[in-house]
Length: 405
Ligand SMILES: Cc1cc2nc3c(=O)[nH]c(=O)nc-3n(C[C@H](O)[C@H](O)[C@H](O)COP(=O)(O)OP(=O)(O)OC[C@H]3O[C@@H](n4cnc5c(N)ncnc54)[C@H](O)[C@@H]3O)c2cc1C
Image (cartoon, rainbow, N blue to C red):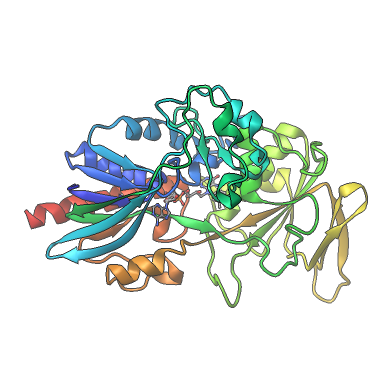
């Protein structure tokens, strides 16, 4: 398979770069490892209150629609690059594609497989975050019982259109390209590496991405333990970021999304929100006004929790020291949200080695001859910045291709 540009990753950055390039007549192949496209941005919830908070969650759908229907873009989902090498002035990639276990041509989305699947709660069957995507259902082999020990084929037996087949083989292909765009994005920083903030240990302590997912699905925040709407919600900024030994950098975007999430819960659900922080980065088009509004609506406490534990009636207690020299204080909340940062994609070292790139800052990617980086693969940024960054990367690709011609 020949193309002019190979884009790796179909998050908002890969999608934006591919659209720029294809609009200018380039034949673009996009390799995405997931069943669905959109990356993390497609999972974000709208944070509008009385008016738009400019959280960027709505920047994706139009682009996704154009991307999925663009004649100049070939999309390979469920695919990963096995190797990529420079071949003279071009690149040669070996790509492996997992089979679609649910055939999108046959599936009529009746939902019987979901009813039968014993591991549906564990994510064995997934739906895309965005309804327009095809397929509308996909099997996750990591959670599906059939792939653990062959125990369950209940979905296959229930399927009235015989869309489900566990036996389809992988496919391998060679792709030649004149330039490569790395757009594999980020991985969410573990919110509680030191097991101090209660994630996974204390009920009703959740990571920010879990809250985003909740808001996207239902528009409301609820407590995982009992499904009730929380009245007192605390947020911890810089959870998993700015560690002395790992991720010793600021993820830049967490203050913006964290304060927007907190304001959203205050205004939409009437919750009282408290934000624990070290320092606050400016955010939005008018940062002073944004911060002034946040200070009016939220309780901002400049202290990081030292300890977190389970309280009565599934509450969460948070211990912190507001001023040095003072004894620690304890406060109770109904829900605690850990605002995690952005960590580099673990695949970055492999691409750096394959393509002989210089190491980027903090484990993110740097460019090399014919190799361009788009969005959070290059470092932490929000959706709007990722779109702009991808546009600039695509422009640089165009200049590179014209120079080579
Ligand atoms: C908790 C949280 C809340 C956020 N809230 C906001 C917000 O309110 N507003 C905002 O503007 N931003 C927000 N962001 C940031 C936003 O998610 C990012 O800016 C955006 O997702 C970056 O897009 P991307 O395409 O660079 O990366 P990603 O979204 O990470 O997409 C990368 C894509 O590449 C694919 N991929 C990765 N590796 C490979 C590989 N080796 N081969 C093939 N495919 C691969 C992935 O599957 C994915 O589809 C938030 C981030 C977090 C963590």
